[in-house]
Picture 1 (cartoon, rainbow, N blue to C red):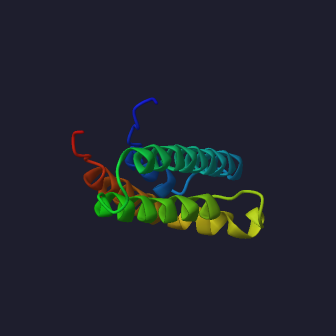
Picture 2: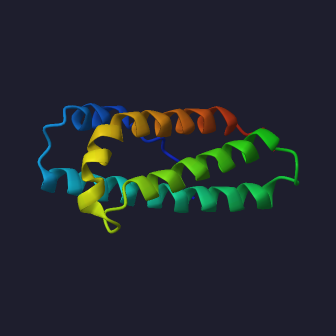
Length: 121
């Protein structure tokens, strides 16, 4: 299994915050964010299954909480950057709230990274 890399969201947040992105650029960024969140969700499911198979149930409560919190944050990301559902109505909201949402996602990733320090076997 390849190592899990932590995404750095800060740089895109500053580009979104400028508000000068044209509608096609905003649409493409939202599509890329949603794709990144979907890929991260798939990787998290795989990681969770490997950890569950490796460690006895209940031994990694912090990691379990971290996985649940990150899974919720990634599901929110997937919904928030969905370009298929009412995009024309939501585009301005995505532009306005992207920096906040990206900070929230970054916090969830940091929290998970702290919880993901596994004991040696």
